[in-house]
Image 1 (spheres, one colour):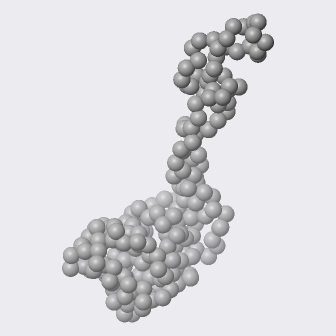
Image 2 (cartoon, one colour):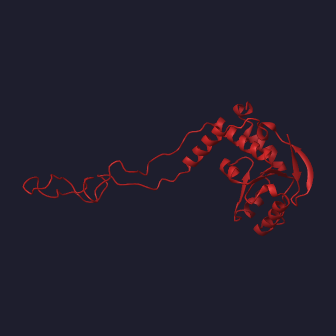
Image 3 (cartoon, rainbow, N blue to C red):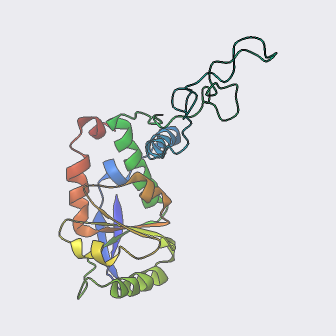
Length: 221
């Protein structure tokens, strides 16, 4: 599988061979992608709601009134769930766990499926280089804007995959809206999915293969 290589100014620099095991899956399983995304979102869920049980509500050490003779129902504590301001029965707790397990093979298959879909739809572009004179946000924003104008398929939101040598891009792109910069060794499935365009540095292709093709189960897919 081949892909066009562009310069940072948007000029055509030829083609590059892409690994078909990563960027050229013929059968993409939407159900596996859905399971992985659901698992990742569930693991990121922040548990906020938390109620107090009868034993955690303040007060209630003294019996509210005598057992008999008042005509009222028997009561031993104002912390009872039957009383206003008392404990909550079966309410939400802060120790709830929403994590869903997803095995490594399915996670890597989802990653390859997303990259393959981006490559087939033309939303994945390979750049030969993206050099900056200094790690400045303004300079990077200008170059990306020119690139998006010359390659409309990239869209407005971008995910840029870089090699370990290009750490200046991470510093320059931190404050850019709709721009995510990922290392080739730590790709994020959610950020790849949400981006309208994926820009991969040419020297990052080897890093992706080295990191994600080590798994024998992934090689079989």
